[in-house]
Length: 173
Image 1: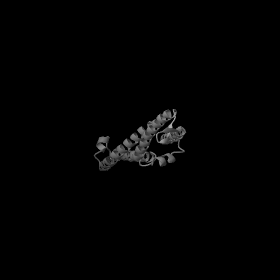
Image 2: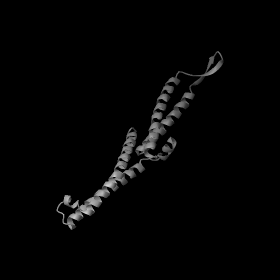
Image 3: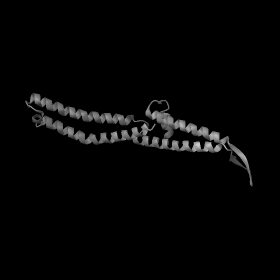
Image 4: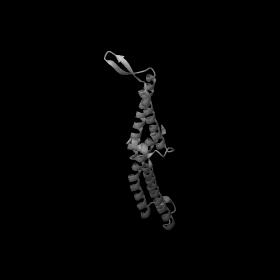
């Protein structure tokens, strides 16, 4: 999954997801480079059983650097996994589209109620919005708005929570 994420974002280096993928890719390349460098420091060491592989004096610094980068790479890997789990895919596009759809649906319901109230005030002769609310058309619009809000408001809150968590992960990078 991590390699697919990196491949998906390999050309998108300016996006937050692309920076996360690049950070992982650069860390993996650095691990490879340090491992190769570490292998160059292997020397034969004579022991009671004959010659065994050992490291010369420069290997300790490389091993410490390698350990630090591997730990950082582990954190990046877990962040990528958490991000993909939150988003359900390799980018936040689906979550953002869902959030916009839910916001539009809720806004349209409020707009329909407002229009029904204004129509009733003009056509029905109601002097105030409070008087117009008792009309059947306005009551019907209010009931529909309540149904839509009951259905979509929790969905919107859940999606916004997931977006906030995903943005928090990306903000590290």
